[in-house]
Picture 1 (tube, rainbow, N blue to C red):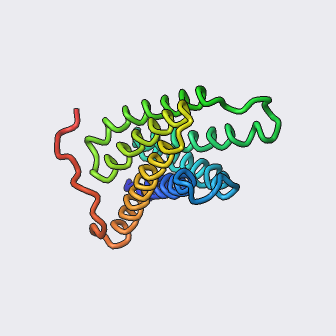
Picture 2 (picture 1 turned 90 degrees about the horizontal axis):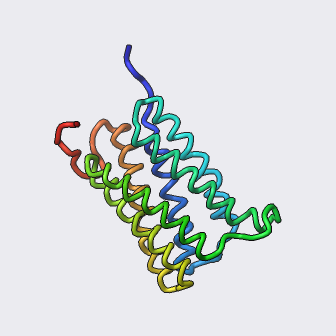
Amino acid sequence: MQDNLSNPAPLGLTAFGMTTVLLNLHNVGLYGLDSVILAMGLFYGGIAQVIAGILEFRRGNTFGTTAFCSFGLFWLTFVFLLVFPEMKWWRLGPSGGSMAAYLFMWGLFTAIMFVATLRLNRGLQVVFLTLVVLFWLLAVANLTGSSAITRIAGVDGIICGLTAVYVGVAEVLKDVYGRVVFPIGPMDSRPRA
């Protein structure tokens, strides 16, 4: 029986990428943190990525399941960390130290996931490497209160997000045209352990 399931990775990649770009346009100082970013984080960055992760599970893709579900839930927790204190659901919002720890741990998780991308395409390697840098720069920025580091992180985040969108669109075009239209780098030819 042939598996006719579509590839959910483009949904997850574009959801992650577009939401990441919007947040990091804020981080570089182009506009404030508003409902546009929060809604994207909740629905497209959050829920759509979790759906993509569940669909990757159905396809037997452990990496895709772990990455999309985890980063989808990152977006959901991030939005809740920002919104719940404003809604008076919790008395206190996150402190600089606790937010730095939160971002550091996400960077650590992403660094481990980056190692897995070394057996995947170059596009995903760039996404995960720039994401590690983004999380750790934002952790330092939250710990120190440095707006300069936040802006530098924002530039890195825009690159990360645009790369994720590129890889997602490359996968869609490859499926539609039956050939590589936007290259994402060679697949590693080493045998799997």
